[in-house]
Length: 235
Ligand SMILES: C[S@@+](CC[C@H](N)C(=O)[O-])C[C@H]1O[C@@H](n2cnc3c(N)ncnc32)[C@H](O)[C@@H]1O
Image 1 (tube, protein in one colour):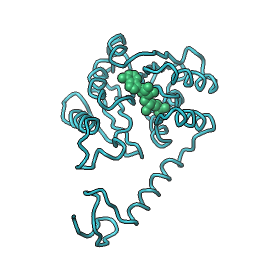
Image 2 (image 1 turned 90 degrees about the horizontal axis):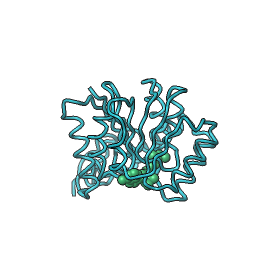
Image 3 (image 1 turned 45 degrees about the vertical axis):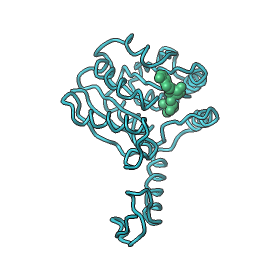
């Protein structure tokens, strides 16, 4: 077991971030940062309800901090055409739509029609016209080849880590030059930086982040929201 002074609290403690243990001060600091980031832009009751529906279905949704970042990114890019892979109950979709141009269309894909039924109700309750969303039921790998090349401003990927690499390749084709790819849940539920985590989903996530960083076609940055957003602009 590693024994050493912790870089943040300078306490000598048994264990370190490396073997998954953290001192109490660091844990409190991390909780404080997470709570501040999630509370800085508060969710409205509709987003809270959509998140609760997701919880009931056993689905993860983007954190409030990640949702606010998605809205920011869509607004900064004046996004009109957005693809989302992983509709869920519509939490991330609603954040994206609120940042997009008023005439923008969200194309959102999910293999589970039941999840999309809830999302459809959430979008309607938000007062969005049906024309603002194109909700496609199907597996990402079957649907993505049917979407047009080079016309999308933003692609948000939030489904199955084992399919993030294929979705990234597809996004390279779908995005216009200057368009933005965002991968959700990019901390891999905390496993990304745990060197002992070698499950296939975590390994796949590390590989896709490395390829985004190292390949010429992307300009990458990692946004450390509580759940992590890996972003890259299509050159
Ligand atoms: C984490 S949830 C998405 C949550 C949503 N983005 C949000 O924040 O509200 C992942 C969703 O991806 C869907 N999914 C999983 N694998 C898929 C695949 N291969 N193709 C399409 N959808 C998939 C699941 O049914 C689930 O609804």
